[in-house]
Image (cartoon, rainbow, N blue to C red; front, side, top):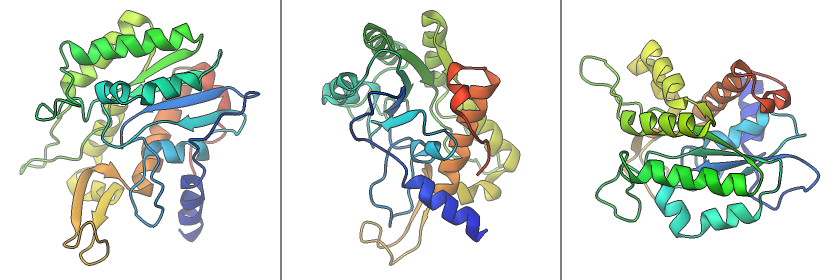
Length: 251
């Protein structure tokens, strides 16, 4: 167990948001807090993109542009997409995963309707990526850990999952159904057993949460490793070109 924990810690520090190595193919990660880098390693939250390098050969560079609180709309509006595009080169791959923040109707800066705006933004991302002669990939949002009183998992992102799948089909883009992978796993394991993959903050430890916090959206290190594992297994199952860079399926 000690060896596993150390392995996960060092994997979580192996992220990058710096300039790319022009001699290597790069996988760019575009998304929200469930994928993004968490620079404060003293705080237990992790994005699954931070753990992905633990499964991937260093022959593939992973550049994590994902950011907390972003949606397809906000990521473009505040200039993050333009910066990411400037760092792409021919032959690179770009994985897009949004949805959690797109559905926030109360926040006009982030909201993108599942019926119109969200798919329109995904089409724009795909066009921009192809204009750079890179390859787009789409992933659905990971599942929230929300169980009802009867122990049934609530599927809170279905509209966005279906929209992402439809865009991938229309554009002939590889689709990674991370929502299905994670929801299926949570349903199989159940409410109590899945707590250990999510952020749990005890009272009196962090200034931001003096009374503690229970978070069923954001991952800890174990959860981030689990989700990264689902992605690399899907790469192999699809026989995707990126699968050649996977050098292990378990930590």
